[in-house]
Length: 247
Image: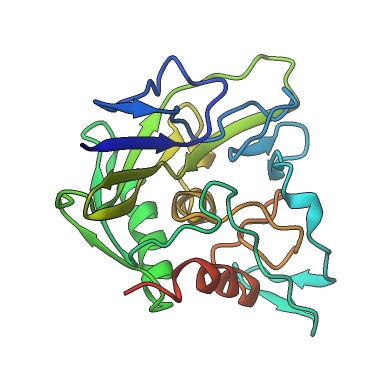
């Protein structure tokens, strides 16, 4: 007897991300909600009034203390001695995942979208904590699908959604034991050119790998982005919490 459990986040885009399991209990999504909805969200958005990028924070973000930082114009930041470890998405907490991911690009994703996601992949691979390789995932292996979607904001909206991403944790239970893997996604909002940047791609890939929002302004996962695309010490420590026990 085999039971497949799919566990994830989903609010606004349930109609798009329907459950895709043969024998399953649960639902799938990517913590998708607009910044003004009050729902949990992993979307990166851009403030339409002052051209500042931002993301609506999830409920876990407020549990982490903030450190004092200053940003630079090169995507890096100078940090204080107080390192804030980037939190883990709640559905990834306590889950053992392989460090290897197989990724694919959706056919509709433009060359610009592929370029920024490849930059993001290189940034995470450089840590040695995860290993992202292009290709079709074998059965029961981690995978990431990079894609594009289109969502225009209302004319009077103070924020512009730039992307979304998140993990989908799947567990297969049989008499041999339990196998767990991540079928993650990361997407850019094709209606806005600002979405096609390294900072947005790194942020959304971080969610796909299991990183939640951080309260540290050093972090690429900080809810208000200042164009950062280099992983902070806290981001790397956050990855270690998830993948240091991986093979």
